[in-house]
Image (cartoon, rainbow, N blue to C red; front, side):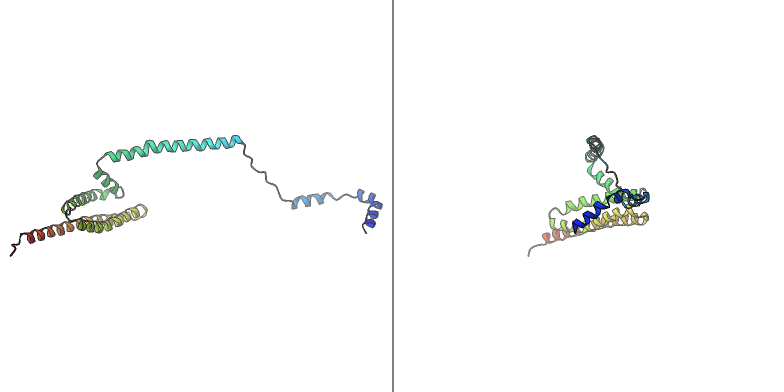
Length: 194
């Protein structure tokens, strides 16, 4: 069968060679072919340029960190530690409430010191008092975080002040309890044995 086909092609060879496809055939074929996008080629020079730019950015950012940020942290550490805690906590409070908040912070710190001194001989009681205070303090920290993102800051600020006042009141009551315990202990020790 293949020999018949070969004979046919050989006999009609001249007719096959004279026929050419039309010009529109090739344009139709070109339309169906996918368009090749040129791939981006990076030379070694380009890679070196990008690496150098990244290194410069890293060096600048590191320098800024060490010169500015760490310097501020060191300055804060050198100042009075009580002032830094007040300053850190006052950062979240609006200026119109800052004076009142500062008074309450000072009262809280004073009462904490008094409570620490009053419960030296009873560390379990002091730990229990601290647990109660830490609950209020965690609520204050949550309010402070909310203040940064809420549009109605006035309500949050009032809640923060109220929380601080509650902390001061709790410390005052804890001091009263400690003093009552000491009085009862003293009275029990003074009772005549008999």
